[in-house]
Amino acid sequence: MSNVVQTLSIIKPDAVERNLDGQIKDIFLNNGFKIVQEKKIQLEKQEAEKFYKVHETKPFYNDLCAYLSSGPIVVMILEKENAIIANRELMGSTNPQEAAEGTIRKKFGISIDKNSVHGSDSTENARIEIDFFFKS
Ligand code: CMP
Image 1 (cartoon, protein in one colour):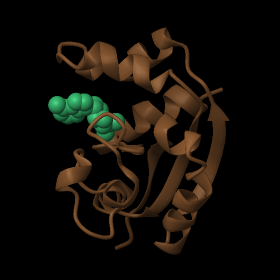
Image 2: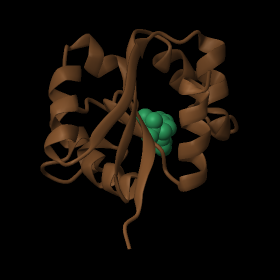
Image 3: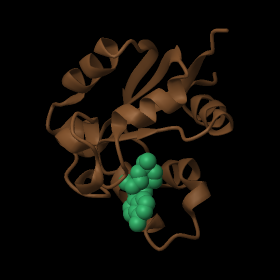
């Protein structure tokens, strides 16, 4: 039975700043993802705080929100069979130093903060994150 689903992907400020968004989008397309919608935006810090609310008790929360709102990002709805898991595999570990060869974070990530991409981690969060950016 097919399980084509959608997930939310963000190309973070470190990657957009280095003009890597085209290359990263090509990686998604070459791995069978469809980019259903996309837009380039810059968040206000308050919006980043809302997006990352699940991390609000973490010590890195403030820096994380300041960083996500520090420059333009590209947000995309990606679609594929088992897209949530497939995207997390393609991104690699949160810390680029621990990411496997061939993953986006291994290739482009600079640090655990500047790790180039974000992807939804569950079906529920994918829906919440897609609505956050694309619900009209
Ligand atoms: P992301 O997948 O966007 O989700 C939350 C982000 O917090 C994560 O990527 C990292 O960039 C960032 N982060 C910073 N420090 C940590 C940490 N110690 N553990 C997990 N995530 C961290």
